[in-house]
Length: 302
Image (tube, rainbow, N blue to C red; front, side, top):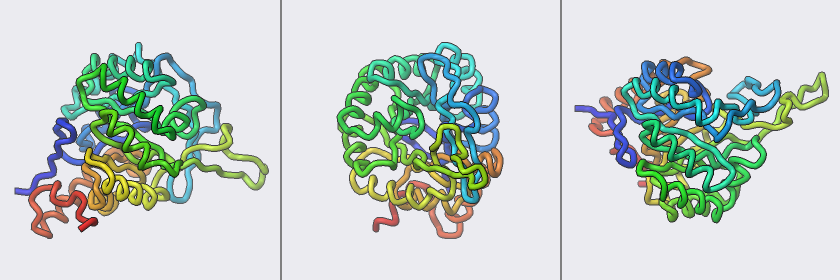
């Protein structure tokens, strides 16, 4: 019998697809819609200590092969997110609470609150490229990352995933620091720092000047990063970046991802993308005599 079930750091998932943080993850209703679309797990919008408006418009540009965004981490704040989590948990699949902070203590407090709300795991946003003082600015330093992970790990009993940036030559070093500090998994990658110019206006399109590039345009970078991480780590890797169909999902799985996150494709193809990806993977497994999805993890290294 063919099975797409995944056990990710003690988190049971019916299939290897997850909603990526940053899209359709701010309300319980939108998260539920992704579960109904077939997602095997849901990752919330990155939530901070206090409400945050984010950057001024324009914040999003649709490109030929993806999106460029500089949202600036808008969110309702942790105090107001409990009711959204309660609704999201009704979807019947694991919910991962994404959090961002400026200090190890702030990350730990937010992670603790997410656990209290019922989150099955927490994802530490150490990689946002367009929010000053957060994300990538912290996630490029192995010592800072280790300190954050260690503090969070000491405060929660649920799995801790560190989401890392590709915008550094120290990716492996940072990932190993997170692993050594107790991370249960690595999420790779977040968006690539990028810019778009309006040649008629002769100015950057985004108000924030630069933003994060996502979608199919970044997939080859993400696949390369997961390949390298798989060679260097013992903990599971969650691949993200440009997954739009079953073939792109399998690219990540074959280079070592235990699961994949889907974000931009939700905007481009709708919530049914999760079910479509899983159906395609199931068909591939049937055609190739593969019973368990785990049999495909890392086969590109053989």
